[in-house]
Length: 95
View 1 (tube, one colour):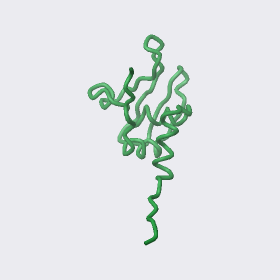
View 2 (view 1 turned 120 degrees about the vertical axis):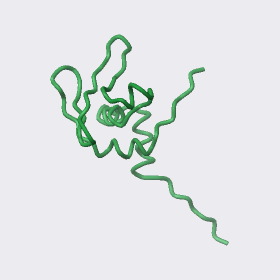
View 3 (view 1 turned 135 degrees about the vertical axis):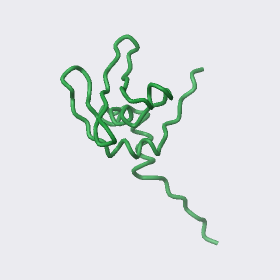
């Protein structure tokens, strides 16, 4: 069975603040952080890739990929986004 990777909610919080623009070549330019990065669809692997070192070196979903996931309405990212925007509240039972 394929194990699901948990989305880093801190990284997702940072992703929400980024700006996205189409690059005219089936990709996006994501800006708003230290520098802008290019996110492109890799047809060979059927997934988006990012030019940032976070993705290339650590192999994790960087904030730029998460931002594109928000734009595209990726179900797993949309579910995680609900935790960031409207975190569940804990209710105490009355004594």
